Length: 239
Image (tube, rainbow, N blue to C red; front, side):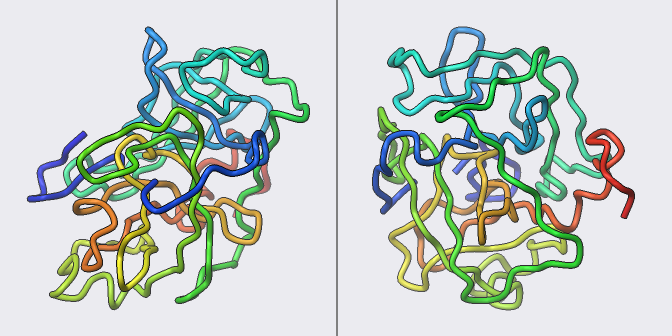
């Protein structure tokens, strides 16, 4: 997907590696009705998936090799979509959504839940986090058959918003991650997937300019800034 900002790519793993099979078990593949992967998501309970607001159709949990039936998959259709009210398709602000599944998944060796950040927690510049997905492996394309993962350091909002980078387009509900030298990043098809820091989902793959470009880190929805809105649906205490 492409948005209206020049050069901005939505969906956006480059420079990563294949983790041990079924070692990242909270990640789900969001697919079209004909089984084509187009986004990632995170199981945050047996019945709820956290993803980007521009991602939804069918959910596959327990997958490792997309397009190959391995017997570990659990297929679910969405029952309810809850998008953050201030989501803006043009700026990608508040690019976050909850998907309630028609039936809960069964937790096992292949399917698990990732916790949300603790209230008041935050990411700091240089903190290394992990992003995973089945997205493009090069800026020009190339979809992997198996899951890929990469670790990336958090980039300060000041640097990410500088005139040599995103020039003021990074809002308070976004965080950036990437290396100054580039070469490692999320890319098209990874959208909606989790940026996991210290075992918790702090970010959602949202958008960026190109992929793995040293000038432009990947941009993620800052879960901690928006999660209070979803607490009632998740039966969590209000913030």
